[in-house]
Length: 187
Image (cartoon, rainbow, N blue to C red; front, side, top):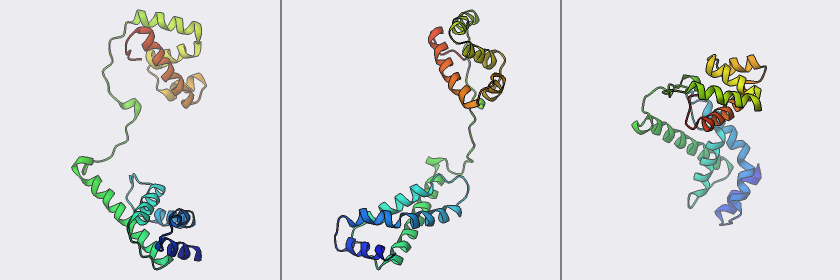
């Protein structure tokens, strides 16, 4: 990769196009370096390789008076920049403001406990009857989710649809019912 050394020399000489020329030439190697760095991190890292490469590149090229002694020096500086970025991220995660030592837990949509407002079942039945006249599938979905208490995956299996299709139908149907009932119904 003799181009890297030539481009670094141009950048050092003050060529404004050199920084734009440099990234495509070094990107793949920087990405490999970032992947190796991130593989050594603990699970739950929020930075990905692309973000790490971009942040390191901005730090390297954005610094004033770079004095690169060739390709090796540039990649050594890139590795050091990535290390500083990862250390800064780890410090932020440990700070009280960002959760400190708390354990990260995945939040499941079905596990969210929210108060369910009282639903006027007569009004809901009338709305479902209107909905069935327009779209029987959506009315069946409400019956399965709201009255039978099935999860999205269970309703998808019962209706013979994919879970993602049922999720899309459920979002639309809930919004339609809220509008029909005139409030944020718990359906």
